[in-house]
Image (cartoon, each protein chain N blue to C red):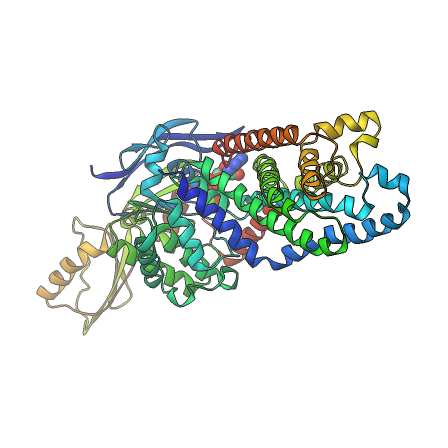
Length: 257
Length: 330
Ligand SMILES: Nc1ncnc2c1ncn2[C@@H]1O[C@H](COP(=O)(O)OP(=O)(O)OP(=O)(O)O)[C@@H](O)[C@H]1O
Ligand SMILES: [Mg+2]
């Protein structure tokens, strides 16, 4: 059987479900906006002196934070969309896919792609709301950011899918959300530069895949960053390939036992 | 080939639990085969093995001539299934659920659209085509699942407790659809249930399963007679002191005179001997005023075979649904 049919239709399903769940959309946009505005604007005035701006690549804090917040939005939304495989497990849709004659890899890649597209959409809305509040955004940077957002979204929805396929309970979901999501965000350089972190934290930050997405977004939207663009892209592409491969393998061997 | 499903000594263990313990049966093409058994008997596990979702610990099974372990992809193409637990996506519409299903099975374009309309009309949900499933009643969801299982025109349809937890009217309606499927579509139906009446109403042949083992198999009539004889009561008219005829024939197991004008006969199969009895009494000038007969039920047969009853009360179903819900959120 073809690969394109299951891929397209699982993407379609994610998009349809996204359109239906408006509250999910509002929730996932409000949260990063609250961070950006209260945390960002608050610190922005506190950091309003030249030495501080040096730390933030010559920008005021709010501006520095914005690319990080956009990536945080995409990360959170795509990860959670992957984790909703748990719900499919609970409510039987998973069995419906497992019993079908379709190859499972494209089905799960399609689901990832759907999760990635909806996450990207949310990230772009957040960007659109924040852009007028800051001055130095490079508008053409939005085009590479779309690609970066897609890769970040694909990777983390794949991670979410992998975990959810392996997990058996709802508690697992809550544990994961606190033990994985928050640290990943704080250790990504979204809120503060990696260069000023303590050494041990730097190591964790370099090991964190989200770091490379945040750095790229900052490069393209502001023209500043901690790492090289080429390194960032190589890591991000490798990450996408690896996470999708792992998710496909786990899902191919998924059973209801 | 005459058999669409062949199970040969299937065993499935979950750790220490033996869910299916050496199950062997054959399902004929185009028949409705009922798998009747109480809670935890191994019905769902058997369906999961036959539909390639679980690998048997040992034993073999063929569906439409294809081995469920060695060629699962070929088996999946020819089966449709309605799971015991609901499996429609209730955030999507009826149409979207069927559309996704069709695409996963390799259908598309105009053909898929036509099949979706046809399936929705068949199951009387066409008017709800673009309604979200979360607004549907339990019965409607069940029907949608049946429609979905038919979209790709399977050769074998598995129905796992299709009327579990539904009210009597809705159950009767679902039975009508199942009969209609059998009449109009060229499909073999494998149905599990713990409702006696459901198995009797629908199945051509029934296998009774308990503790992972088949303990009896055959047409409903045959299984019923396991529990013993059928009983015929005859009341004569205008007997006027005549001798009440009560002699043993070879097809009569026992005959007893009841009061002035009635007799009771125990026979193996009332449906076969009733015409003979009519003939006989008529030719001898006896006028039959009233005739009644009682057959043992499947419940009697189950009781006879296992020493316990299959519980059928509503309360237990509700309790069971509740446990399912609890289990889900655990
Ligand atoms: N995944 C599993 N892990 C462990 N035990 C299981 C699993 N699935 C089923 N069992 C056990 O196997 C036995 C048979 O279960 P099965 O679901 O096949 O029964 P059933 O006849 O369908 O019952 P029900 O009427 O409750 O649906 C039960 O004792 C059940 O607890
Ligand atoms: Mg069951």
